[in-house]
Image 1 (cartoon, rainbow, N blue to C red):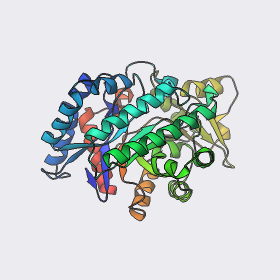
Image 2: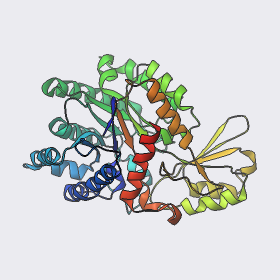
Image 3: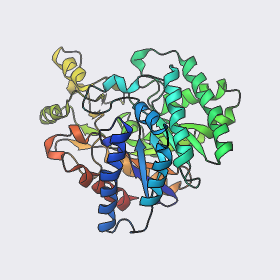
Length: 387
C-alpha cells in the first residue's frame, strides 16, 4: 500500500507459518482478505497495488528458492496486484505455538547460519521485489545481552553482507538494505547504545560508505518506547549519525503505573509462555530498571528485590493492537507511535518502508481478541487516519 512517498504493509509474522507451503496458504487467504476488507471500506482503491510485509523462516526461504517456486510466486504477485518490499528476518525458526523467548535471537549474528539465511532473503527479494520500492530485511540487533556475544564476528558478518548487497544491487538494480532492530536486552537496545554500535561498525568497515548504504536500522516504535526514548529526538539523532532508517515498525507496548495494585493484577493476564515480555520500570529521577521477562518481575517483587512503590511507570514488551487500547488501569504507548508518524510527516524522505507489526494476536487476553483479519484491517485504518 502506498503511504506517499512511502510504502506500508503489515507483517505476516502474525500468522503461524514455518514452511513455504503454509506461508503461501496465508498469503492466499489472510493477506488477500485484509486487502479486500480495506477495499470494501474505502481505505484502498480497488485497483491499487497492495504491499505484503513477508515473514519467511529459514526453512521456508530455502524451500522457496528450490525449483520454480520463486518464479511461480512472482507470477502470483503480478496476478493478484500485490508486491513485497520487505521481509522480516528476525525469527529464524518457529515463531508461534512454542517457547520462542530467547530462541528468537538464535542463531545470532556471531553465527554464519544467520548470515546465510539473511543472504537467502535478499536473493528472494532480488527476484520478487519491484525496483521502484527498494527492498529491505529486518533482523535482530546482533545478539542478546545474556549471550555475552563476541562483537567481532557480528561486525565481520555485517561487513560481508554489505559487500554482498552492493554486488547484488549492481547486478539487479535494486536498493537493498538491512535493518538491525534494537529491543530491550538486545546487544544494543536504545538510542545511546545504537549510536555507539554503529560508530564501532563504521570504524571497523574497510568501506564505511557501503555500511551506510546497505546496513541500517529497523526502528520499532514499541521497542524504543519501552526504553523511554522520545521518538522524534531518537530518530533525529540516529539519522544525523548517518545511520540509514531502513524500516519503521508501527507498534505499541503495554504501559501502567506500578504503584497501582489493580494495574499490577491486570498485567498478570499478559504473562504467557511463548514470547519475551521484558519489563522496564522508570524511577522518579529517570533511571530505568530492566527485567528480562514478566515472571522475573513478579519474582523480584515476591522476594523483595524491588518495590513497585519506588517507580513511576512501567512498560512491558507486549505488542498491543494500534487501534485497541487495553482496559484501564492499563494503557499502551500508542502516543509514541503517533510521534513516529508526526516525524514521518516532517521527514517524508527519511524512510520509505513502514510496517504494522502486532504479532501477538495468538496470545492476547480474551478482551483484546478479534478475528485476526479484522484486527489487522483495524490497525491499517488507525495508521491511515493518523498518517
